[in-house]
Image (cartoon, rainbow, N blue to C red):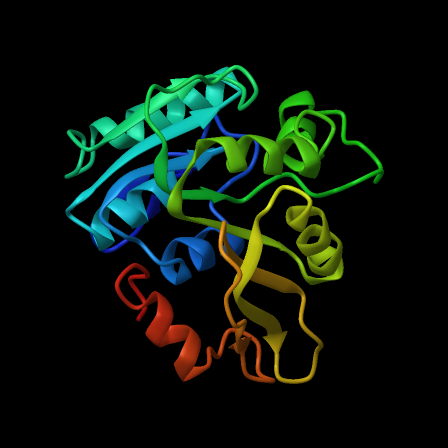
Length: 234
């Protein structure tokens, strides 16, 4: 059985990765502002977000890091087989040990967020899903030091922890500028938060997105419009 995930302009091999291609990463890759310049993808996994950003902006240079060796090898292979292999580079490193010589115009992350929840037996999946290896505070501290003065930090998180994360970000002089509240369908409350921070206080821009109608696998026009450059079915 193939584990390949095919997008319109690239494909993702994911047999080595604990966390497969999922809605969260695709949402972030499609939604975030993508300025020209240097981009850092923290915890790249399969590399899907980096590849989406490379597709969206031909003037971006992307560094993708992952602490897990298999994820590093998988993303490196996915980058090398893509149309943008000259603009994306994978690094096998924790965020804490990553010491680039330049700061970033954009930093993106689909971080681990299962705080204090039960652990699976798969150690790689634990690292990808739990905050033990990279706490929110450690993430924000590193982001603040790696971001250019006019840079952007974009992240996707459970809606339930969005407020806590926003308050913690302020202690690192990172301020929420843009928020999208994501509902799984019309009947349910928001489950995810797409969030954009910068080192400058601005008026908060808040929007909402619903993925499905009340019928399973029937997607809203807004969701189709956001992801149509990537998903084959749209």
